[in-house]
Amino acid sequence: MTDLVEEFDLLVVGGGKAGKTLAMDWARAGNRVAMVERGMIGGTCINVACIPTKALVTSARALRTLRRAHQLGLVGEAPQADSGLLRAHKTGVVEGMAAGNLKQFLDSGMDLVLGQARFTAERTVEVTLNDGGTRVLRGAETVINTGTRPLVPGIPGLAGAGALTSDTLLELRRIPERLTIIGGGVVGLEFAHMFSAFGSSVTLVESGPRLLPREDEDIAQAVTDLLTADGVEILLGSPVTSVERGADGRITTTLANGIGVSGDDVLVAVGRAPVTADLGLDAAGVKTDEAGFVVVDEHLATSAPHTWAAGDVAGSPQFTHVSLDDYRILKANLAGGDRSTRDRLIPYTIFLTPELARVGLTEQQARSTGHQVRVAKLPVAAIPRARTMRETEGVWKAVVDAHTDRILGVSLLGPEAGEVATIVQTAMLADLPYTALRDMMISHPTMGEALNLLFAAFQD
Ligand SMILES: Cc1cc2nc3c(=O)[nH]c(=O)nc-3n(C[C@H](O)[C@H](O)[C@H](O)COP(=O)(O)OP(=O)(O)OC[C@H]3O[C@@H](n4cnc5c(N)ncnc54)[C@H](O)[C@@H]3O)c2cc1C
Ligand SMILES: NC(=O)c1ccc[n+]([C@@H]2O[C@H](COP(=O)([O-])OP(=O)(O)OC[C@H]3O[C@@H](n4cnc5c(N)ncnc54)[C@H](O)[C@@H]3O)[C@@H](O)[C@H]2O)c1
Image 1: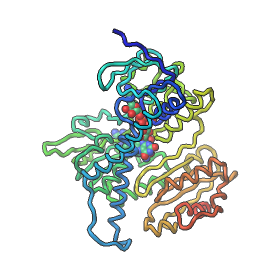
Image 2: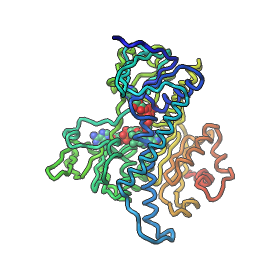
Image 3: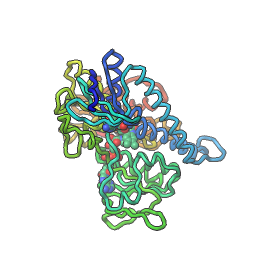
């Protein structure tokens, strides 16, 4: 027997950041809303990405601080990382947030449908319910927000060797003695620094000629130096050609240049693939690109009428705050507005210790897009607050338009960099000249205060 089609004002397929926020909004406003989620209440970020990793970064940072306790006038036995306790800490944070999300979903009045969705026609999905059975749902408006998953490339031997992904490493029951990480992107760097603090001997293999190609060379070098000083071995410029687990259980990762790296575990962190393969998008009239990401226009509309996509799956930059901004765009456009994804000022923070935060253009990007620039640089060691914390590693860099005095971008490597970058982002959005931050009275001694120093430290 064919299931009855249930009609909704809004159907959200995949409960990621954009989709769940929109679903709650529309449901609270009295609309009929269905959100289909196959398992992760709250989405990727809360369950297997931002939140668990940042919970563990907190532990890694605490360990690093405690290891230099003597500098801070403290003595006593040094704590060690314990895999069981780390997992309990991480799981506690995740479960607390997922439970909070579930309550909000139910309180909003949405129909939360737990199961795997597959499109069978335009704006129509069949859901294989986790509890058994099926439902067929149709939305007058439909949003696809199914996210991404770790990409596992076809490197010979990789799958057979039991390589870990960011999802599975978070569930590991022991701290690897020797951890090989394939990929020197954001995931690779965050895990490398975290596990080196936990006591793993980490080797990071990156096929590109340097880490962080999106950053200026001097900033990428500062990050490389930071990791190297903390014992992470970094091998650049040669792709992995094969991975093999030996009889002794050790895994050898072989590079094109012949170097072999031996480890107990291998983390593959070479990017993320869209979750679209089993979604039946053809039946929905929704086009995807070669890699499988949903093709959207600047309004986040797909090729099918009244069908939208948001977050990672729509090819948006892969950050939770971008998915949240996609929600804002969808909310406006579904109400008849005309909001676009063009020219968004997108910040991000890479949670190393200390962290690297960026907003706006790098020096290289500013110059290559025709700006005449002035560049200011400040060593973190010159910042009073950093000295009181004895956390003096890092460098701050600002790029300003020489004609307009407007801030084009900052790259901040240092403690609390993510928070300080938000101040700069606010000034950029308000179109303030850099002198506003240079001359503003700021509490002493805070990290933010050093914006006075940074914007007085031009090199020309
Ligand atoms: C290790 C790691 C750390 C990260 N750290 C950060 C960070 O610190 N800050 C940051 O901004 N970003 C971070 N990110 C990126 C961030 O996690 C993603 O950009 C963000 O989660 C994308 O959200 P989304 O809205 O696209 O959807 P997602 O959160 O990916 O949600 C998609 C949902 O759809 C569900 N789904 C998929 N297919 C179906 C289906 N057929 N039927 C039903 N449900 C389905 C999934 O179960 C999932 O819950 C990190 C990523 C990783 C991998
Ligand atoms: N703090 C944060 O906001 C945060 C944290 C983690 C992840 N993320 C998001 O998740 C996304 C995915 O992260 P990611 O690190 O998986 O991908 P990525 O695209 O950032 O980096 C992948 C890296 O792997 C390298 N690589 C590819 N194939 C390789 C091979 N065969 N051998 C060796 N190196 C290879 C690439 O050159 C690249 O440097 C990020 O782009 C980011 O948007 C954000």
